[in-house]
Length: 352
Image (cartoon, rainbow, N blue to C red; front, top):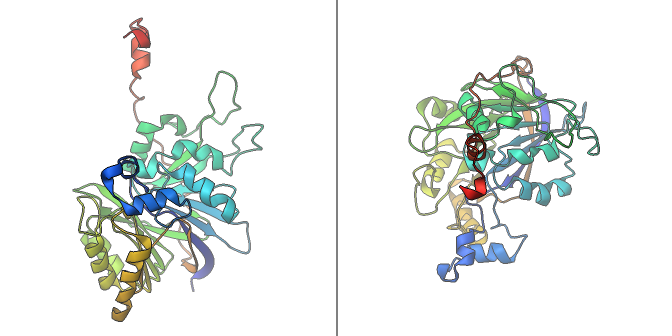
């Protein structure tokens, strides 16, 4: 019989890549966007939305709480400041990535501040690497932007004291996850990657949490492939979190509200939360409209930054931790920066 583990999910980013308030709509007086202006004027507004981001806490009574971060985008630091102190979170134990776009990975440089593998801040020493779980293509994207964070070839990052001449680098241990491969990013937490399309043929990962798929997370999706749809149809999810960028219709790389509701009607989860919303959605008005779907037996609502859910997730006995399957990259060194090229040519950057 599967083991049951208490888990808390907190959505700490519920908007799209641009986040809300949209700066263009705030700075241009003729934009006339009431949602963005309300979010700008009210720091606690539920219309204030960061990049899609999920914090998962495993609360096994037999051990200390463990924290998994799902995506680490451009608004990660703001999310930490807004929510970690309130939740009593001191840091994260592991990272799970959906894909390699800016709204999913560009906050990784700030991860060093919340690594639980650190000694006291005064020493700036990493005791261990932080696991990062992603597809091979996504790890390549991370490497192309943040090569100083990842081991190359040997899988042994520099875990060193910072000196006046060396920069402390986040020690990430990349783990490759395969389509539909069940694994444990944290002890007691079962996850199954579900590949979906995120514009054209670009593949993004959704995730099925729990042995029974009690919590399903599809933050960036334009189309659900047949193999993934078959798994979703076979799952009676308690919670479905699904992409809905625009209220008016589909975007090239995202579901709109009609497509999200079509999936909700097909899967009929106990509760559905929309994520990745643009400023076409007003939290207060549109939640009232979505409430009308109760007449169809559907519980659909807009998520918001800080939304918490407590659940019990099941765990199969034979799901691996992947601790011994570190993904080692065999990649060429990054191209030299413009500054380094100019130095080679004997030219000064400011004079070029």
